[in-house]
Image (cartoon, rainbow, N blue to C red; front, top):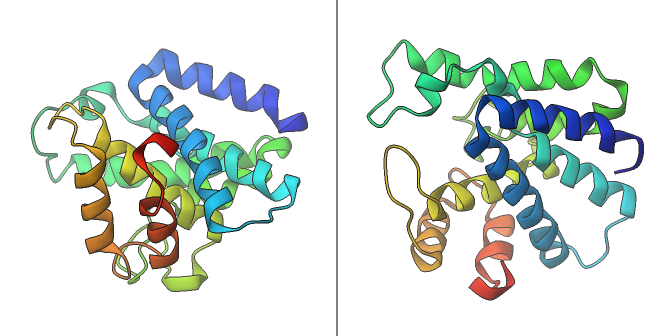
Length: 189
């Protein structure tokens, strides 16, 4: 990650102090994004791979602005909670924009909740108009969320996660990225 490593680690440490589960999730998503990137494309330039990993590592940094009572909520989010949650990609991108070394992370941070069908947020981008790094982070983010305990539900296994992702291929997620992840064995992830 070069010059971006120190500021990224500082932000991730701050996130860990605010909500350690989210910080650990970000680290897992970055590791998974690396594996999926190698599966998805045989040849990546090192700078491109570094930008993907940086974006994955910081994808939820905007949750620094989300109260822990919302992040730890065991039940359904209220109508008042949703705008706060949905603001985290924009807030995270704004935070990264304040640190020049983190500029390459902005597309993943801002667009990891866009959907292939255009029903996502914050910009309602669709298909290939969603930056590739953000499409990879979105799939890895969802896989990790499914396979780890959350306050509102227990973790599900690899097979269940792959099945859910495959049903969302071409709707919520880039089908090529989904199949790059689901084509890997559980031991590879």
